[in-house]
Image (cartoon, rainbow, N blue to C red; front, side, top):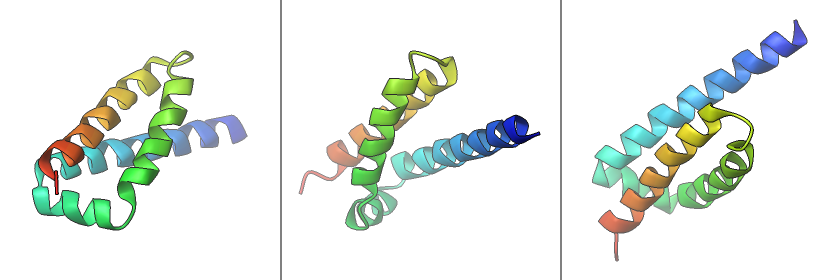
Length: 80
């Protein structure tokens, strides 16, 4: 039961991260807020962890690509 619960929790966190990434990529003012509250720093830390996990699971590799695109959009769209 504990393993199932941990896997379910991990899946929920991944889905939340995926949804957040899509939202941030598409809306410039959300990107600015996201950056102002330290979201890019957190996302960078998540990316490092996903890269490490990507050698073990395909879902981590796919999510790492989504996170990379999110970081790229935040940087490219907000060159201030």
